[in-house]
Image (cartoon, rainbow, N blue to C red; front, side, top):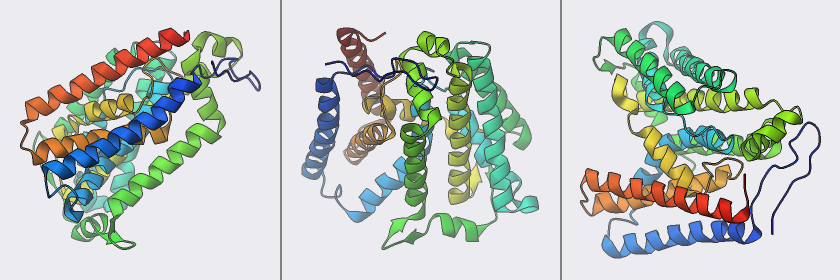
Length: 332
């Protein structure tokens, strides 16, 4: 049975096209997959369920998770993907440590996030108003930003000097929960509220489901797509700032691979590359699945190239399944 939301308040008449059966299957299948990984990991390694290992998994997924929140908006608005993430992460980390001695960690971190946000805004303007292909636009902007980051530091590693902030970021509160994890969960919750309870969230679904109908019903299609890339740029910069402060080291290439991990998590979580379908909780479920699988492979000594093949296979399989289900359901 097709689920259609009526038009109103400038909304496109068709927001989400999704069968009840596929929706139920998505909500059951992902938790079942996570549970299966927990069982397999426990059987394969006695270290898997240790507090230290699970804490490392949470910390690792928290940095990627910040980017996943933004990438979910990009996917749902039918923006394909943001490939400038490595650059925004890098510029955030470099600026917070490079400006730390003169501005302090807080102001330097704000500058890092703002610089990454400008890159996201440029992406959004190119894609939303000038209709440049998202892959081309984000690759071009990412290359420029990364080049600027390399010029700023001369291609070398930047070291921080604020050990107090480092200790704070790496500390644990509320019975041992890492501060980084709390920051991530807060951002994820705010992202979920923004996507599911606000006008910009409704427009995001509408634009992704049917851009033509959304534009005909006076929905702000250009602004909505631009906002998705602006948000991803800001969160990429924020991830770089948190990473730089926690390590007190940064380099231009520090963000390489984060875009691939975020895309993998989003598609595995059932967020449609074709737009209009998905949610922050499902993307977080996909992130947890991917991180647990990666952790199991690391504990088993699986080489990095094989891990890359496994992630690539997950993306291909998830996208193929999404296309099949959307065509079967009659999605546009």
